[in-house]
Image 1 (tube, rainbow, N blue to C red):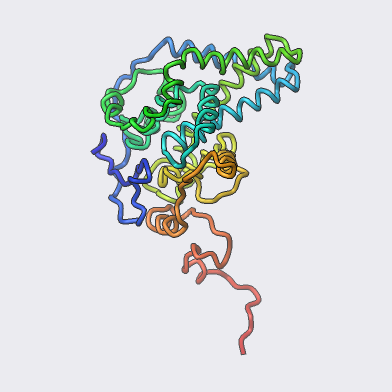
Image 2: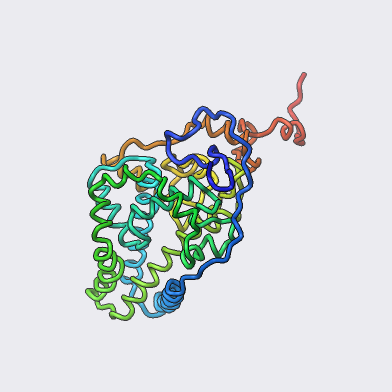
Amino acid sequence: MPPQGQPPAAWVLEESDATTDDKDVAVAVPPSAEKRKLSIVWRNVILFVLLHTGAVYGGYLFFTKAMWATKFFAFFLYLCSGLGITAGAHRLWAHKSYKARLPLRILLTLFNTIAFQDSVLDWARDHRMHHKYSETDADPHNATRGFFFSHVGWLLVRKHPQIKAKGHTIDMSDLCSDPVLRFQKKYYLTLMPLFCFILPTYIPTLWGESLWNAYFVAAIFRYCYVLNVTWLVNSAAHKWGDRPYDKNINPVETKPVSLVVFGEGFHNYHHTFPWDYKTAELGGYSLNISKLFIDTMAKIGWAYDLKSVSPDIVEKRVKRTGDGSHEVWGWDDKDVPAEQKAAATIINPEKTE
């Protein structure tokens, strides 16, 4: 059993773990956090304060001083690094929701390195922990400790002993066997500064941008922005929103987060069906750029074995554990409760002979 005795049915990790026939799940034990004195890592606090101070200044330069080419370049890096996290470290490697051929694995590893959120191997291990022991002391960013802790505070304190203890139980052999990921891990301290800071600072100077603006806009502001929108999945998407798929867990559906994190805000669905490559029930692209990217890669043959959940399984889960907020398209949607139809007022009803 995981910490605090939370049952496994609520936090399926991979497809092989899923209850795809929608069998009854155990009643969830409310997630909790052990009361403990947090040990602050002051080095991290100082570094993050300096980073965010520089990012605020970089944001000022973005809107007032930077050239348009630099702004577009920073936005391009935001897209690349964001996909390196969402389509790469998250959906491909942490959850194995689809498979990728070598060119795509190399591309996503490059994008992930630009993001500088640790190597794929470390990121995926922490994320598997987050799902396997969600909202317990073995969850690296346990949301029951509050918004600030789940957003950034978890990076400013020593890890809970349960994280270290349970971390060794997570099977990472599938990812450790990938030579691309081993290469990134081995040379991370060389590759990360080059692709996250040095090249993003140098490239804008090729079109006449000042080194000062390039550094604070394309490197610092862009990097800090991507960090914070990614963290919103850990914080806001575990706090404010509906739970149409499973009301017994903290993760929620939040469209604003999906907008800035490329489809990652449909979090109640994702924690209910974590092996679905869409991380959402519906397949639209407007709030799910990651799905658009993966589908495009599938069309050119770089992505394959895309896993999804059948509408029948989703419907059964919604009816059994949802909070009643599952959206309907109109009168004849099969999810409209019969009692709502019976209570509806029909104006100018059809006359029968």
